[in-house]
Length: 404
Ligand SMILES: [Fe+2]
Ligand SMILES: [Fe+2]
Image (tube, rainbow, N blue to C red; front, side):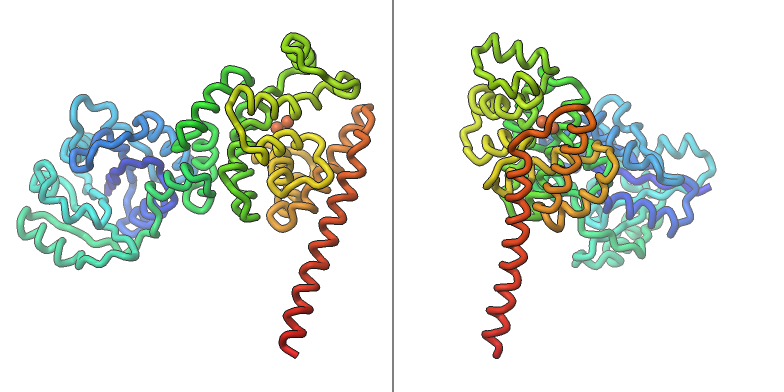
Protein backbone atom coordinates (compact mmCIF):
# COMPACT_ATOMS: atom_id res chain seq x y z
CA UNK A 1 0.00 0.00 0.00
CA UNK A 2 1.35 3.41 -0.99
CA UNK A 3 -0.09 6.47 0.71
CA UNK A 4 0.61 10.06 -0.30
CA UNK A 5 0.28 13.14 1.91
CA UNK A 6 0.11 16.46 0.14
CA UNK A 7 -0.24 19.32 2.56
CA UNK A 8 -1.03 22.90 1.72
CA UNK A 9 -2.85 26.02 2.78
CA UNK A 10 -5.21 25.69 -0.19
CA UNK A 11 -6.37 29.28 0.08
CA UNK A 12 -7.89 28.51 -2.37
CA UNK A 13 -7.09 25.17 -4.00
CA UNK A 14 -6.27 25.78 -7.69
CA UNK A 15 -5.71 23.73 -10.83
CA UNK A 16 -1.96 23.61 -10.16
CA UNK A 17 -2.61 21.71 -6.92
CA UNK A 18 -4.99 19.32 -8.64
CA UNK A 19 -2.73 18.61 -11.61
CA UNK A 20 0.19 18.08 -9.24
CA UNK A 21 -1.87 15.67 -7.12
CA UNK A 22 -2.99 13.67 -10.16
CA UNK A 23 0.45 13.51 -11.63
CA UNK A 24 2.23 12.51 -8.40
CA UNK A 25 -0.46 9.92 -7.71
CA UNK A 26 0.20 8.31 -11.10
CA UNK A 27 3.98 8.74 -11.04
CA UNK A 28 4.35 7.06 -7.63
CA UNK A 29 1.44 4.66 -8.22
CA UNK A 30 -0.23 5.75 -4.98
CA UNK A 31 -3.26 3.86 -3.69
CA UNK A 32 -4.47 6.97 -1.93
CA UNK A 33 -3.40 10.57 -1.82
CA UNK A 34 -4.59 12.81 1.00
CA UNK A 35 -4.58 16.56 0.47
CA UNK A 36 -4.21 17.91 3.98
CA UNK A 37 -5.51 21.40 4.72
CA UNK A 38 -3.01 23.26 6.88
CA UNK A 39 -4.39 24.86 10.00
CA UNK A 40 -1.49 27.09 10.91
CA UNK A 41 1.81 26.05 9.35
CA UNK A 42 4.60 27.21 11.63
CA UNK A 43 7.01 27.98 8.78
CA UNK A 44 4.72 30.57 7.17
CA UNK A 45 3.98 34.01 8.62
CA UNK A 46 0.45 34.16 9.96
CA UNK A 47 -1.53 36.47 7.70
CA UNK A 48 -5.26 36.94 7.46
CA UNK A 49 -6.01 33.53 6.13
CA UNK A 50 -9.44 32.22 5.15
CA UNK A 51 -10.92 30.05 7.91
CA UNK A 52 -9.84 26.42 7.64
CA UNK A 53 -13.42 25.14 7.40
CA UNK A 54 -13.97 27.20 4.23
CA UNK A 55 -10.64 26.16 2.69
CA UNK A 56 -11.54 22.55 3.44
CA UNK A 57 -15.01 22.91 1.93
CA UNK A 58 -13.48 24.25 -1.29
CA UNK A 59 -10.96 21.42 -1.42
CA UNK A 60 -13.73 18.89 -0.81
CA UNK A 61 -15.70 20.32 -3.75
CA UNK A 62 -12.68 20.46 -6.03
CA UNK A 63 -11.89 16.78 -5.40
CA UNK A 64 -15.44 15.50 -5.83
CA UNK A 65 -14.69 13.76 -9.11
CA UNK A 66 -11.08 12.78 -8.46
CA UNK A 67 -10.15 9.15 -8.09
CA UNK A 68 -8.08 8.10 -5.06
CA UNK A 69 -7.46 11.73 -4.03
CA UNK A 70 -9.14 12.79 -0.79
CA UNK A 71 -9.37 16.00 1.23
CA UNK A 72 -8.16 15.73 4.80
CA UNK A 73 -9.03 17.91 7.78
CA UNK A 74 -6.74 16.04 10.18
CA UNK A 75 -4.65 19.16 10.88
CA UNK A 76 -7.73 21.35 11.29
CA UNK A 77 -9.09 19.03 13.93
CA UNK A 78 -5.85 18.90 15.85
CA UNK A 79 -5.57 21.14 18.89
CA UNK A 80 -2.75 23.65 19.22
CA UNK A 81 -0.05 24.37 16.66
CA UNK A 82 0.01 21.95 13.80
CA UNK A 83 3.20 20.29 12.57
CA UNK A 84 3.76 18.15 9.51
CA UNK A 85 5.53 15.53 11.62
CA UNK A 86 2.29 14.98 13.57
CA UNK A 87 0.35 14.56 10.34
CA UNK A 88 2.83 12.04 8.97
CA UNK A 89 2.69 10.17 12.30
CA UNK A 90 -1.11 10.16 12.09
CA UNK A 91 -1.06 8.44 8.69
CA UNK A 92 1.75 6.14 9.80
CA UNK A 93 -0.41 4.82 12.62
CA UNK A 94 -3.52 4.69 10.45
CA UNK A 95 -1.84 2.74 7.64
CA UNK A 96 0.61 0.46 9.42
CA UNK A 97 3.05 -1.15 7.03
CA UNK A 98 2.21 1.22 4.20
CA UNK A 99 4.87 3.16 2.31
CA UNK A 100 4.33 6.87 2.95
CA UNK A 101 5.18 9.76 0.65
CA UNK A 102 5.12 13.37 1.75
CA UNK A 103 4.61 15.64 -1.26
CA UNK A 104 5.94 19.18 -0.97
CA UNK A 105 6.55 22.11 -3.31
CA UNK A 106 10.14 22.53 -4.47
CA UNK A 107 10.30 25.86 -2.62
CA UNK A 108 9.68 23.98 0.64
CA UNK A 109 12.81 21.91 0.26
CA UNK A 110 15.04 24.80 1.22
CA UNK A 111 13.20 25.29 4.54
CA UNK A 112 12.85 21.62 5.30
CA UNK A 113 15.80 21.50 7.77
CA UNK A 114 13.97 24.11 9.89
CA UNK A 115 10.80 22.05 10.11
CA UNK A 116 10.00 20.27 13.36
CA UNK A 117 11.78 16.91 13.59
CA UNK A 118 12.90 16.54 9.97
CA UNK A 119 14.76 13.29 10.70
CA UNK A 120 11.64 11.75 12.20
CA UNK A 121 9.58 12.83 9.18
CA UNK A 122 12.11 11.15 6.89
CA UNK A 123 12.11 8.01 9.02
CA UNK A 124 8.37 7.64 8.41
CA UNK A 125 7.96 8.93 4.85
CA UNK A 126 9.84 9.63 1.67
CA UNK A 127 9.88 13.28 0.71
CA UNK A 128 8.66 14.09 -2.81
CA UNK A 129 9.51 17.54 -4.18
CA UNK A 130 7.56 19.06 -7.06
CA UNK A 131 9.04 22.13 -8.71
CA UNK A 132 7.56 25.03 -10.61
CA UNK A 133 8.61 25.69 -14.22
CA UNK A 134 10.69 28.71 -13.20
CA UNK A 135 12.52 26.81 -10.47
CA UNK A 136 16.12 27.94 -10.67
CA UNK A 137 17.52 26.03 -7.71
CA UNK A 138 19.33 22.78 -8.17
CA UNK A 139 16.74 20.52 -6.63
CA UNK A 140 18.83 17.39 -6.68
CA UNK A 141 21.72 19.04 -4.82
CA UNK A 142 19.28 20.26 -2.15
CA UNK A 143 17.74 16.80 -1.93
CA UNK A 144 21.18 15.20 -1.54
CA UNK A 145 22.13 17.52 1.28
CA UNK A 146 18.87 16.76 3.12
CA UNK A 147 19.45 13.03 2.72
CA UNK A 148 23.01 13.42 4.01
CA UNK A 149 21.89 15.47 7.00
CA UNK A 150 18.78 13.56 8.09
CA UNK A 151 18.84 10.18 6.33
CA UNK A 152 15.83 8.84 4.45
CA UNK A 153 15.01 9.56 0.83
CA UNK A 154 14.10 12.65 -1.14
CA UNK A 155 12.53 12.11 -4.57
CA UNK A 156 12.40 14.87 -7.17
CA UNK A 157 9.15 14.44 -9.05
CA UNK A 158 9.38 14.39 -12.83
CA UNK A 159 6.29 16.56 -12.97
CA UNK A 160 6.84 20.28 -13.24
CA UNK A 161 3.81 21.93 -11.71
CA UNK A 162 2.12 24.70 -13.72
CA UNK A 163 2.81 28.25 -12.70
CA UNK A 164 -0.41 28.94 -10.79
CA UNK A 165 -0.49 30.32 -7.29
CA UNK A 166 -3.22 30.92 -4.75
CA UNK A 167 -1.82 34.44 -4.33
CA UNK A 168 -2.58 35.15 -7.98
CA UNK A 169 -6.11 33.71 -7.65
CA UNK A 170 -6.75 35.96 -4.64
CA UNK A 171 -5.31 38.99 -6.45
CA UNK A 172 -7.60 38.43 -9.41
CA UNK A 173 -10.63 38.02 -7.19
CA UNK A 174 -9.74 41.28 -5.44
CA UNK A 175 -9.09 43.19 -8.68
CA UNK A 176 -12.15 41.80 -10.53
CA UNK A 177 -10.27 39.72 -13.07
CA UNK A 178 -11.43 36.31 -14.34
CA UNK A 179 -10.13 33.21 -12.59
CA UNK A 180 -11.70 30.54 -14.77
CA UNK A 181 -8.37 29.25 -16.08
CA UNK A 182 -6.84 28.96 -12.62
CA UNK A 183 -9.44 27.07 -10.59
CA UNK A 184 -12.16 24.50 -11.22
CA UNK A 185 -15.65 25.68 -12.09
CA UNK A 186 -16.92 24.61 -8.66
CA UNK A 187 -14.31 26.71 -6.89
CA UNK A 188 -14.91 29.68 -9.18
CA UNK A 189 -18.62 29.55 -8.34
CA UNK A 190 -17.97 29.00 -4.65
CA UNK A 191 -15.66 32.03 -4.41
CA UNK A 192 -18.17 34.27 -6.16
CA UNK A 193 -21.20 32.96 -4.28
CA UNK A 194 -19.40 33.70 -1.01
CA UNK A 195 -17.66 36.90 -2.17
CA UNK A 196 -14.32 35.40 -1.12
CA UNK A 197 -11.14 37.46 -1.52
CA UNK A 198 -13.15 40.46 -2.70
CA UNK A 199 -12.56 43.97 -1.33
CA UNK A 200 -14.26 44.84 1.94
CA UNK A 201 -16.74 47.17 0.24
CA UNK A 202 -17.98 44.39 -2.05
CA UNK A 203 -18.35 41.76 0.66
CA UNK A 204 -20.11 44.30 2.89
CA UNK A 205 -22.67 45.01 0.15
CA UNK A 206 -23.11 41.28 -0.38
CA UNK A 207 -23.86 40.83 3.34
CA UNK A 208 -26.43 43.62 3.19
CA UNK A 209 -28.06 42.03 0.14
CA UNK A 210 -28.27 38.72 1.99
CA UNK A 211 -30.66 40.38 4.41
CA UNK A 212 -32.94 41.67 1.60
CA UNK A 213 -32.90 39.00 -1.12
CA UNK A 214 -33.87 35.36 -0.86
CA UNK A 215 -31.17 32.71 -1.20
CA UNK A 216 -31.91 31.94 -4.83
CA UNK A 217 -31.85 35.62 -5.83
CA UNK A 218 -28.60 36.20 -3.95
CA UNK A 219 -27.05 33.20 -5.68
CA UNK A 220 -28.19 34.59 -9.04
CA UNK A 221 -26.73 37.99 -8.12
CA UNK A 222 -23.30 36.61 -7.27
CA UNK A 223 -23.18 34.48 -10.42
CA UNK A 224 -24.17 37.55 -12.45
CA UNK A 225 -21.13 39.25 -10.90
CA UNK A 226 -18.98 36.33 -12.08
CA UNK A 227 -20.32 36.51 -15.65
CA UNK A 228 -20.17 40.32 -15.80
CA UNK A 229 -16.50 40.38 -14.74
CA UNK A 230 -15.62 37.88 -17.47
CA UNK A 231 -17.58 39.73 -20.15
CA UNK A 232 -16.14 43.09 -19.11
CA UNK A 233 -12.63 41.64 -19.23
CA UNK A 234 -13.37 40.23 -22.69
CA UNK A 235 -14.57 43.62 -24.01
CA UNK A 236 -11.93 45.71 -22.18
CA UNK A 237 -14.60 47.45 -20.10
CA UNK A 238 -13.82 48.44 -16.48
CA UNK A 239 -14.29 45.14 -14.64
CA UNK A 240 -14.70 46.80 -11.23
CA UNK A 241 -17.62 48.84 -12.54
CA UNK A 242 -19.11 45.68 -14.02
CA UNK A 243 -18.71 43.90 -10.67
CA UNK A 244 -20.44 46.69 -8.75
CA UNK A 245 -23.29 47.07 -11.25
CA UNK A 246 -23.90 43.31 -11.34
CA UNK A 247 -23.79 43.12 -7.55
CA UNK A 248 -26.52 45.74 -7.19
CA UNK A 249 -28.56 45.05 -10.34
CA UNK A 250 -31.32 43.24 -8.42
CA UNK A 251 -30.81 44.98 -5.06
CA UNK A 252 -34.54 45.58 -4.73
CA UNK A 253 -35.91 42.61 -6.67
CA UNK A 254 -38.89 41.85 -4.46
CA UNK A 255 -42.17 40.11 -5.29
CA UNK A 256 -44.46 42.45 -7.30
CA UNK A 257 -46.83 43.39 -4.49
CA UNK A 258 -43.97 44.14 -2.10
CA UNK A 259 -42.30 46.32 -4.73
CA UNK A 260 -45.43 48.43 -5.18
CA UNK A 261 -45.88 48.64 -1.42
CA UNK A 262 -42.23 49.68 -1.02
CA UNK A 263 -42.68 52.46 -3.59
CA UNK A 264 -45.92 53.68 -1.99
CA UNK A 265 -44.43 53.65 1.49
CA UNK A 266 -41.24 55.43 0.44
CA UNK A 267 -43.02 57.87 -1.90
CA UNK A 268 -41.33 56.72 -5.09
CA UNK A 269 -43.53 57.58 -8.09
CA UNK A 270 -44.29 54.77 -10.47
CA UNK A 271 -45.65 55.00 -13.97
CA UNK A 272 -48.88 53.41 -15.18
CA UNK A 273 -46.88 50.89 -17.13
CA UNK A 274 -44.82 49.98 -14.05
CA UNK A 275 -48.01 49.49 -12.09
CA UNK A 276 -49.19 47.08 -14.79
CA UNK A 277 -45.78 45.34 -14.92
CA UNK A 278 -44.31 45.83 -11.45
CA UNK A 279 -41.16 43.78 -12.18
CA UNK A 280 -40.00 46.74 -14.31
CA UNK A 281 -39.74 48.87 -11.17
CA UNK A 282 -36.78 47.03 -9.69
CA UNK A 283 -34.31 48.20 -12.35
CA UNK A 284 -35.08 51.92 -12.06
CA UNK A 285 -35.56 51.78 -8.29
CA UNK A 286 -32.43 49.61 -7.99
CA UNK A 287 -30.36 52.42 -9.49
CA UNK A 288 -31.90 54.91 -7.04
CA UNK A 289 -31.18 52.67 -4.05
CA UNK A 290 -27.67 51.86 -5.30
CA UNK A 291 -27.01 55.57 -4.97
CA UNK A 292 -29.01 56.41 -1.85
CA UNK A 293 -28.48 53.27 0.20
CA UNK A 294 -25.23 51.78 -1.09
CA UNK A 295 -23.38 55.01 -1.84
CA UNK A 296 -22.69 54.37 -5.54
CA UNK A 297 -21.93 57.64 -7.31
CA UNK A 298 -20.59 56.35 -10.63
CA UNK A 299 -23.10 57.32 -13.31
CA UNK A 300 -22.07 54.49 -15.63
CA UNK A 301 -22.69 51.90 -12.92
CA UNK A 302 -26.06 53.43 -12.05
CA UNK A 303 -27.06 53.51 -15.74
CA UNK A 304 -26.17 49.84 -16.14
CA UNK A 305 -28.39 48.91 -13.19
CA UNK A 306 -31.23 51.02 -14.53
CA UNK A 307 -31.00 49.55 -18.05
CA UNK A 308 -30.74 45.88 -17.18
CA UNK A 309 -34.41 45.03 -17.75
CA UNK A 310 -35.46 46.94 -20.86
CA UNK A 311 -32.20 48.13 -22.35
CA UNK A 312 -32.07 51.55 -23.93
CA UNK A 313 -31.34 53.10 -27.30
CA UNK A 314 -27.74 54.29 -27.08
CA UNK A 315 -26.86 51.97 -24.22
CA UNK A 316 -23.16 51.55 -23.40
CA UNK A 317 -21.11 48.36 -23.61
CA UNK A 318 -21.22 48.16 -19.79
CA UNK A 319 -25.05 48.36 -19.94
CA UNK A 320 -25.08 45.52 -22.48
CA UNK A 321 -22.72 43.42 -20.40
CA UNK A 322 -24.91 43.67 -17.30
CA UNK A 323 -28.03 42.99 -19.37
CA UNK A 324 -26.52 39.87 -20.95
CA UNK A 325 -24.69 38.61 -17.83
CA UNK A 326 -28.00 38.71 -15.95
CA UNK A 327 -29.54 36.31 -18.48
CA UNK A 328 -26.66 33.92 -19.11
CA UNK A 329 -25.03 33.54 -15.68
CA UNK A 330 -24.23 29.88 -14.92
CA UNK A 331 -27.43 29.10 -13.01
CA UNK A 332 -29.66 30.21 -15.93
CA UNK A 333 -31.14 27.26 -17.74
CA UNK A 334 -33.45 27.87 -20.69
CA UNK A 335 -33.60 26.60 -24.25
CA UNK A 336 -30.89 28.30 -26.27
CA UNK A 337 -28.90 29.71 -23.34
CA UNK A 338 -25.74 27.86 -24.36
CA UNK A 339 -25.85 29.39 -27.82
CA UNK A 340 -26.19 32.87 -26.32
CA UNK A 341 -23.31 32.13 -23.92
CA UNK A 342 -21.12 31.32 -26.88
CA UNK A 343 -22.20 34.39 -28.88
CA UNK A 344 -21.80 36.69 -25.85
CA UNK A 345 -18.00 36.41 -25.89
CA UNK A 346 -17.89 37.08 -29.63
CA UNK A 347 -20.50 39.76 -30.24
CA UNK A 348 -22.23 41.43 -27.32
CA UNK A 349 -24.79 43.14 -29.61
CA UNK A 350 -25.86 39.88 -31.18
CA UNK A 351 -26.05 38.24 -27.74
CA UNK A 352 -28.26 41.07 -26.52
CA UNK A 353 -30.54 40.72 -29.52
CA UNK A 354 -30.88 36.98 -28.87
CA UNK A 355 -31.70 37.62 -25.21
CA UNK A 356 -34.24 40.30 -26.12
CA UNK A 357 -35.94 38.00 -28.63
CA UNK A 358 -36.07 35.26 -26.03
CA UNK A 359 -37.56 37.64 -23.43
CA UNK A 360 -40.10 38.97 -25.95
CA UNK A 361 -41.26 35.42 -26.76
CA UNK A 362 -41.55 34.70 -23.05
CA UNK A 363 -43.56 37.89 -22.47
CA UNK A 364 -45.99 37.07 -25.28
CA UNK A 365 -46.33 33.47 -24.08
CA UNK A 366 -47.30 34.76 -20.65
CA UNK A 367 -50.02 36.93 -22.15
CA UNK A 368 -48.24 40.22 -21.51
CA UNK A 369 -47.65 42.97 -24.04
CA UNK A 370 -44.14 43.60 -25.31
CA UNK A 371 -42.77 46.85 -23.97
CA UNK A 372 -43.07 49.64 -26.56
CA UNK A 373 -39.36 50.43 -26.32
CA UNK A 374 -38.27 46.89 -27.18
CA UNK A 375 -38.41 47.28 -30.96
CA UNK A 376 -36.46 50.53 -30.87
CA UNK A 377 -33.72 48.94 -28.76
CA UNK A 378 -33.54 45.96 -31.13
CA UNK A 379 -33.24 48.31 -34.12
CA UNK A 380 -30.48 50.16 -32.30
CA UNK A 381 -28.56 46.92 -31.69
CA UNK A 382 -28.87 45.91 -35.33
CA UNK A 383 -27.50 49.30 -36.35
CA UNK A 384 -24.64 48.84 -33.90
CA UNK A 385 -23.82 45.48 -35.45
CA UNK A 386 -23.96 46.94 -38.92
CA UNK A 387 -21.75 49.88 -37.91
CA UNK A 388 -19.18 47.56 -36.39
CA UNK A 389 -19.18 45.36 -39.45
CA UNK A 390 -18.63 48.43 -41.66
CA UNK A 391 -16.02 49.72 -39.23
CA UNK A 392 -14.01 46.55 -39.61
CA UNK A 393 -14.31 46.64 -43.40
CA UNK A 394 -13.34 50.31 -43.47
CA UNK A 395 -10.31 49.58 -41.30
CA UNK A 396 -9.33 46.73 -43.60
CA UNK A 397 -9.72 48.98 -46.65
CA UNK A 398 -7.47 51.59 -45.03
CA UNK A 399 -4.95 48.90 -44.32
CA UNK A 400 -5.12 47.62 -47.89
CA UNK A 401 -4.88 51.07 -49.48
CA UNK A 402 -1.82 51.81 -47.36
CA UNK A 403 -0.21 48.72 -48.81
CA UNK A 404 -1.06 49.54 -52.44
FE1 LIG B 1 -33.33 42.14 -12.64
FE1 LIG C 1 -31.08 39.56 -12.30
